[in-house]
Image (cartoon, rainbow, N blue to C red):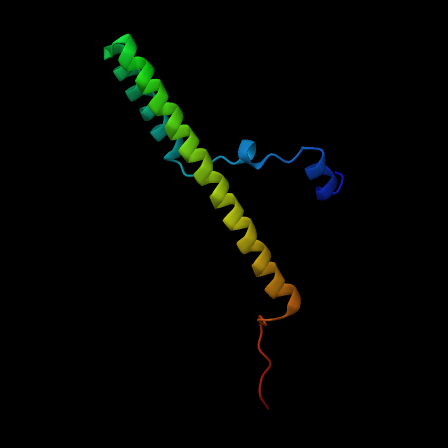
Length: 98
């Protein structure tokens, strides 16, 4: 693999496409959401279906913004932690006092 910097520049690193929660409840919850959406879509008028789809789009936009902000925060936090490690700011094993 090339360097991470080259891969990032070429657009080969796409975290939003690779992040999938590993919580065992993730997929069942998403299937349940899909089932509930289908239920309501069958009951709604055409006008209400359009509004329901708009609501779904707004939720998607909100979730995407939250995910991006969470990723940025996690990345920055990880970088700060690595800075502490590389600068020796916090020693893992403090020296013993004689």
